[in-house]
Length: 332
Ligand SMILES: [Zn+2]
Image (spheres, protein in one colour):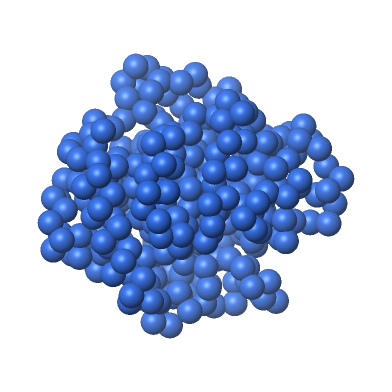
């Protein structure tokens, strides 16, 4: 379709307009605890949770499982085929304590080349559609983490993919965004994940003011106090005019996050958070735009950009027609 931006999913390119409601920060399978078998509980429970997400009105999911976290492209494609949920796969390297041992011997250029090769060819033809999640172990960037981030920045500029940062319980995203800015990345194509675990609204507003997406991605019943605070903060960010910069997800990453284990699964956002936001007075069109338009902004941006030089583009915008990104309300 002329002018249609496409998103690379594990089953191939999908028009951005068909992504529907998107979970922007999840892990279908994940080896966060370096378990012996990262897929131990994954397939069946992941499929059940993806089916519940679809039944609740969801359609797509961004899997932020980067190198070191047990990325499993074949399994992602299999569960996507089984459930019909579009899955956008991540790439890059997570954070230093998860890096392979030789990472300190690899320079930025070599890392950039490895990343570009992964984005261009993928694994058995299953290609990434987003860069991330890319993180830091501490409240500062290690030398290796900074090299990785610079490589990701250069790959972002080359391919036009969105970039997801992992920044938990601290303000390390200041440093990460500085590095990305130095490398010339348009921060509107960057999401700062886990900001709800560093619950300072003025800081979130600074991130949004720099152009980056503010990701509240730990929604769920894990901690009722934190969940109530998260809802308040979403409402407050909307009232402050930042609805167009918000991303909402569950960050399912541990066995206890599955619905069967009492966690959020992949449906909690639609079954619980949306009603809570509605009850708090956030208008339906604003909620809808947060769930549908904002992830598309991260994945393909708002403006025309040159096509990724490949026959099967990761991101492609063929003409001046742009995705539905017009702010509906409460935006600036
Ligand atoms: Zn993370």
